[in-house]
Amino acid sequence: MSKHETITATEARFPLAKLILSPMNPRQDVPEQDIKDLAGTLWAKGMIQSLAGYTEDLDGAEIVAGGTRLRALQYLAETKPDFAKVRPELANPLVMLAPDRETAADWAKMENVVRKNLPPALEIRTFGEMRAEGKDVSAIATNFGVTEKHVYRRLALADLPEPVLDALAAQEINLSMAACFTICDDEAHALAVLDRVRGENWSDHQLKKQLKPASVKATDRRVKFVGDDAYTEAGGKMGGDLFAEEKLYDSPEILDGCFQVALEDAAREIAQAEGWKWVEPITEHYLCHYTMELGKYERIYSEGGDLTEEQSERYDELAELAEGEVLDEEGQAELADLQKIIDGEYTEAQKAHAGLFVYVNHQGELERSGEMIRPEDKKDAVAAGVIKASAGSTAAAAPKSPISQALRDDLNRVAQGAQQHAILRDPDLMIDLLAYQLSHEMRWSNPFGLSQSYVPNWPSTEAAGYELDERLTTNPARDMYDAKDLGASFRAFRKKGAEHIRGELTRFLAAQYQGGDAKLAAMIAKETKPSIREVWTPTAENFFSRVGGPYMNQIWRDLLDLAEDHPTATSFAKLKKGEKAEKLESLFASAETRKAHNVTDEQAAKIDAWLPEGME
Image (cartoon, rainbow, N blue to C red; front, side):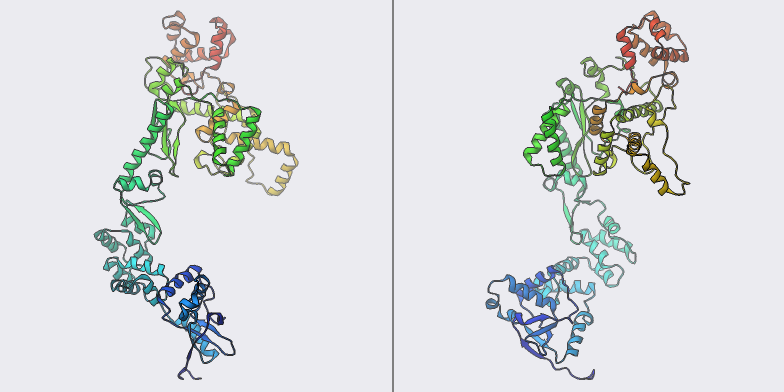
């Protein structure tokens, strides 16, 4: 047959059972949803385009073009009762038969390659015109052999301003960029943005930010916390991005207002339900210790209880179920009751003087800080016996701390070292805690600072009066930069035995310990019982010479229970600053000095336990 020869084809109807997909058909794999969408169209509107096939020596026909239609008809036959009786024309579809196998192969190629889709801009406008003529989505999908979902997306673009479609037709923007314009309901603004992006390769994210700079996504923590109902009831407008299949919240000022109200309501409910003096809402997603000056607050803790052996076993059992997310509501309630025993309860006196902050995290969940006493409430809390007075606290204490920020940083390092020193005594706890961290994503609340290059508080004892367990301060990590054979080095390391390996892991974990969040740090502190004075004693060099004379006067009087006009107090006050620092150091370190001042056992205990303001 020459290429100019007329091809004569015949038509015939076949029962579906006698039609098979030809190996020549290029579209062997079709998404199931496309088949279901087309089946719905065929059932509603019928089949306006016949199948094409080949029937030589076959009891039926091989379909070389129209494979998706064939599978849609087969799907209808499987899912529609009395399919053949209700729709006989679909149960016995018309097939155009090729005169020979070569022609059938050509038809298969033409169906998949030669037929070209309309350019996007033309297709969008054509679909829009058909909709204006009254044709529904299924009819449009049938006419063009596409899915209804495809039609819906094109019709969303048909409503765009004409200049946007003109820019798409002129290839000044691509189809993805055109889709971004559907989120903007301000035509003047959309056209202004269009002028800026013509001929430029903007990402969808950049373009959407220009079209709706203030819109908020459903993933925003404020949206999750407030909820759609409260937002829309307050008058908030909600848009959407059909192509990204996401909701957009177009009234950020209303969202902020709803968020503030919801957060204040949550704070008020906690204060009323639990009886705290204050509960302050924070709009940020975390508490900033520096800007909020939380170092000036006094942290308080409930007096925890101890579980019986039976309760401990039950607690472990329930906690394991909770970790695997298979604990039912009854079990959760039982676990919560046991946790209350461990955590203990705050007294009414504590609640009358203390409070907490609440905030919403990135996941849209309400979080709460640890319980604490505000600086302005400390005096009354001391009088009520809720907290102990520090050596630098007086009724007329100046608002400014007598301790400089540089000294405070050093003292914080000492306190951190004391906790590391204490946790070193419990290797099992550290290894459990490491496993917990590695199996849970806690971001900035990680108990251990295990990044590759950062150590949060590598212990040192350079300052006088500060001495940690030598495992924390000797034999630092060996520098292997010039090592020629790490394999040999590792084999030698393993030969030292499990005890050595566990010891190395223990001391380096202790040096990396940084606490985690407030509740986890408190729990670890309760188990390990760190003592700052176990590792640090104030000396002239590390503390007293770095604070002012009036503060040292107050410390001297408080430790020796002296009135301000007592001769021992007045003579101390007349000393030079360096002399005061040396005398205080002697009071802490010298038995002779204590004997000379007739220090009682009670006063000695006070001296041995004394800590600077903020370290108690």
